[in-house]
Length: 374
Ligand code: AMP
Image (cartoon, rainbow, N blue to C red; front, side, top):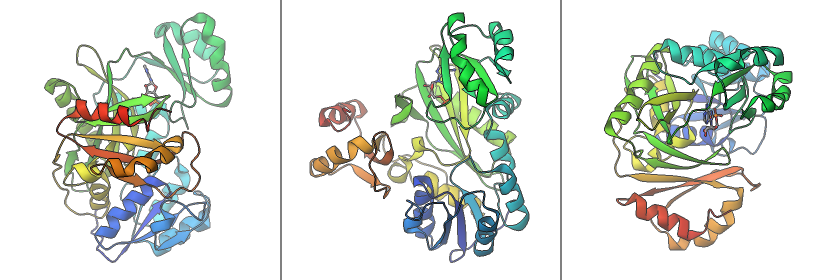
């Protein structure tokens, strides 16, 4: 599976969003050409790509076309049609394979893999219908969270149940999909580790990020996470174990909860660069995107080093105008916008990274700026 892809050759990316765009920009730094498959014409990645194939992600002839023009293929999101990706592995060089997508597309197979890798998850049950949920729920008790096995993101497809009376609230989720119900984890912090591995088994983690969500959407990542050294080591060790178990090639984001006693519980996995790793573009000697390209192109990986503590804040639709009006006040902020033209409320439009020697003071400066007050 390991093959060296040389600068000048073409990297195909399935998905044209901001992750694809930042992968493409990293690849272009090293002289690669980019082909992107994306249903919309003017996508964040399409804007910086050399070749655009405008078609649905599971369109067979479009995938064949992508295979024809690409020397290696990667993807920027996990909800690709598994069968389509599997067929693609037979006609093109897809070093990440299709198995990782199959496993992480479904919370049931994902949790099973985490447990098999020897890492802790919240107690959970699997329900194929409402009756199965009702019959098993006592095994985990209340409060608990019912999540659709497939397709949920940013808190969508989830229902918190506080007591038996709430059970009917989960009916709707189970009408459409198999679900898992998991015990509510009384976490004190959420953290994530981006682990990256190449076909030779070289594995590195980026520094652990501390994630603050607002309305289920990532708002801020603080690096390094403000956790004890022992918890830090546990987080890295868990991410490496999972990467090893999955024989990862490419990138895996491992989201975790930190408990009051410093133990960790793994929440979920994303088999791609992750919003919580964007700080690495400025704050590390190797960004998650550069490392991802190195991994899929068969290059040796670089050992990540953090230049300075950092804060990454997402720019949603409602933050773009306030930020634009304030840019001149904050010369030290690195501003990223993804080229999306419609700034809808809660749509991820970009992010800001701030490297700082005084995280607490910078957090106050961010608050005082008023940009993120909505
Ligand atoms: P997810 O889509 O699984 O990442 O969940 C979105 C967010 O919901 C997480 O970032 C947590 O803030 C919260 N959450 C999810 N699962 C649990 C859980 N078992 N216990 C407590 N909070 C949770």
